[in-house]
Length: 222
Image: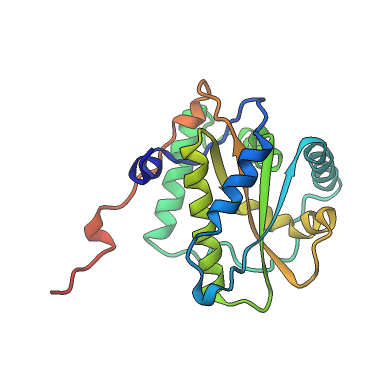
C-alpha cells in the first residue's frame, strides 16, 4: 500500500469486530512508528497498550467509575478551545450530525446519543488500545511530535489491514485511566487510539469526514 492510499483509506473506525490483533505485529508497528519526526530527537511519546485480560479489567474499571460518578475529572488540558469559534465549531457540529444520521439517531433522541457516546468508553469494542502520554515538562513542540507519532502509527496500522480510532474523550477521565495504568504524576494523558478490525457491516463505519479545499487553508507565496 502506498502512503497516499493509507491516507485516503484511514478514517475513524467506531465499530470493531471481535477479532484479536496480532501482538507481534502490533509491537513491530509501534517500533516502526518511532521513526516519526522528533525535534531534537527527544522522542517524547510514552505509550501504554491495553489488550487481552487487561482490556476486560480496564472496561470494568471504567464502567464502575462512570456508574458511580459520571462527572468528568478536572482537565489537564483543553481538548478544544473554549469557546470554539467559527469555522471550527461548524466543522465539529457537522461531522457529528453526519455520524448520527448514519446511526439513525435524531437530534431529539438525547438518550440515544448519550448511549452511543458511552461506547467510546468501551473503545467501540476494539480488542486493543494504546494510551499516549507526554511528560508535563514538555511543550507544544513535543505535543506536535506526539501527534506525528500517532499519525505514523495509524498509517502503518492501515497498511497492515488494521483499523483505528483516535479518542480524545479519554482525557475527560484521565485520573481513572492513570490510576489503572499506574501512570506517574509527571505524565499527561493526551488520548487513546482504539485498534482492531473494522466491522464492514456497521453503518457508522461508512462515515468519511469532509476535508476543506486546499485554498481554504493554504496560501502560496511566489
